[in-house]
Length: 203
Ligand SMILES: CC(C)(COP(=O)(O)OP(=O)(O)OC[C@H]1O[C@@H](n2cnc3c(N)ncnc32)[C@H](O)[C@@H]1OP(=O)(O)O)[C@@H](O)C(=O)NCCC(=O)NCCS
Image 1 (cartoon, helix red, strand yellow):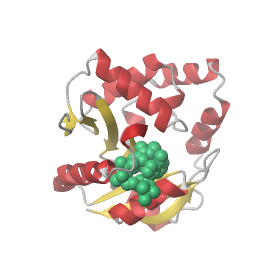
Image 2 (image 1 turned 120 degrees about the vertical axis):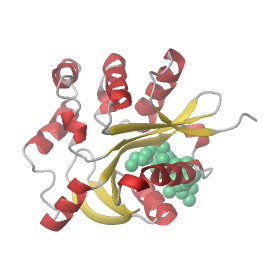
Image 3 (image 1 turned 45 degrees about the vertical axis):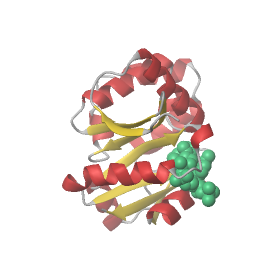
């Protein structure tokens, strides 16, 4: 059996790795804004994450990439790092009629999505690291890899982070963070088609 390796990615992905990663994003994070973009724009997003000092790409490699995570040192870096790309992304979503995704972006822009988060928690979230995206390839799920991967990531970022937050859109992933990694719920974010639960953990 091929050895499994967790790593923080800092160099450009090879074509084969990029393709495996895009497949996982499209299949496992299909409600995310990213998954609704074209392959060429997903590649632009990934390359920006790799070159940014404020965003990190972590991957799990076996004979190919079987899992990944994107972590932002602060949530607002997920906006500021894509200023130059935002029109590519918007045109892509409009031309491909991704109205639900566009509506979710609108909710964020007008600050309606955070209506049910209290002021103290909003400040806490804004200062914390944010696990923005995470997925393990279907065939490798429920084998303890996700838990080990997140423990690896949290150990890596601990030296310059105190708290980490994430969002879940279904009960099963919420239970993953709660039961396996001791995250706790601190609010909800309004999104379509599902309400997101915001979770936090002290590092
Ligand atoms: C959530 C996820 C990252 C967990 O990784 P994993 O390697 O499967 O996790 P572990 O084996 O360490 O722990 C298993 C737990 O993860 C959760 N889980 C497993 N498969 C899942 C899936 N398809 N969707 C959501 N949660 C899942 C369950 O809580 C599971 O516990 P159970 O086996 O007792 O039901 C992974 O299952 C996944 O990529 N799911 C789809 C994408 C997703 O939900 N990403 C998180 C976005 S918030």
